[in-house]
Length: 118
Image (cartoon, rainbow, N blue to C red; front, top):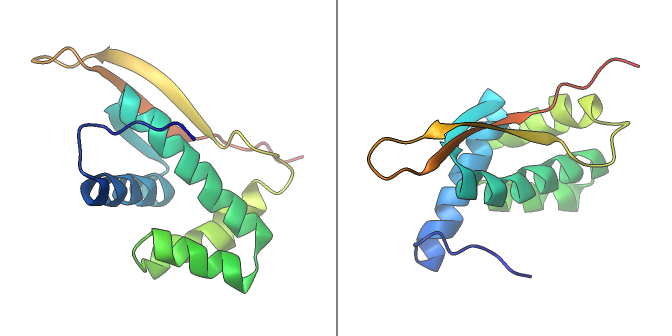
């Protein structure tokens, strides 16, 4: 699987992606760079898929990835999984903003898609 290194060591990258994933889950919207958003989107989708599975193994895998943040895992399993029960993926949306002043990095908003009721 090809992935972006994001100019970080393996430990730093994994921690950063876990923190960004947790922020998306808790706030449901974050502002970050385009490359980080594209990478984090994979993990957010995986966490929601774990929530839809609902098994003990899935809960433990989510806890392991999110550094034992029980609040975030509880939100995934209790709120987000039922919200996206009828959806087979594509739980996030990336909206492009402007370039960041200083390094011209494209800023985006990564947010969870609002699921319409029925």
